[in-house]
Length: 272
Image 1 (cartoon, rainbow, N blue to C red):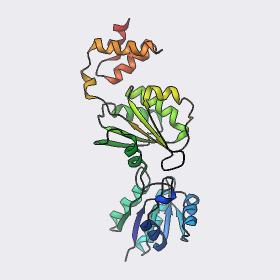
Image 2: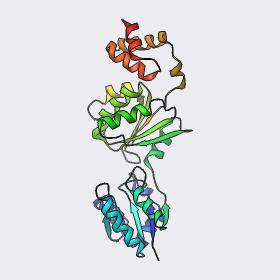
Image 3: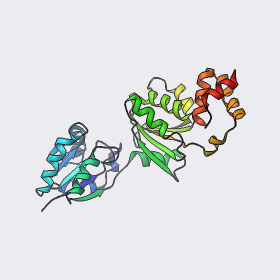
Image 4: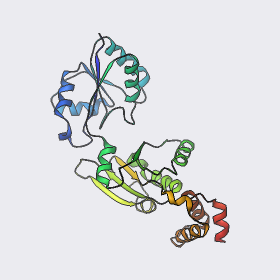
């Protein structure tokens, strides 16, 4: 008889957020599949849990996924964990879970902290409707295509980002989405937790050198539906505002065009 796979949420910072049910699950399973066994070992040692560990991450998921699947089919129970938060959310664990469903393996969730929901709750931004975007694509072409595809998204958007990529991501968001309200949340549940309310334009000025530390969640306001109805004269006024702040005519026309349904060329010509 096949075993069970448990999706176990782990703390995103504060170890006191680890639930009693999660601790009990790790103590009772046969083995643990971890994103980084070194990180998970620290968690296990803290709670005095001794269980066999095997690695499962982006670059070994195909091979290790098959190995883990076979062990579960042979009757072992597995706890799937990531370094922090819920496995299978913006995480290769979703592929393993899909395989388990294909083979009729019982999947049980042991819920725990999730960075995007935690960040959204403290941001104060509109959470009545939102879309989780996870990490943006790495390659320039794929990133540009993705950002263009969400330019007219009216729901609040939630992104994950690593600190060493933050500045570039802020510039890309501003370039493609225009100036929007943004909440930058970092170091969730830790001593230096910080929630920063600003705009995309100001964020590119304040954080040009990846000068924020810790894991980061970006919450960006959705597009305003009225933007598509802006007149050419209103677009010119908006572009002139950007120019007064130091932006070139070309960049101002480009930025306003991305915020509206108007063409960059039409705005640029009207500025001359």
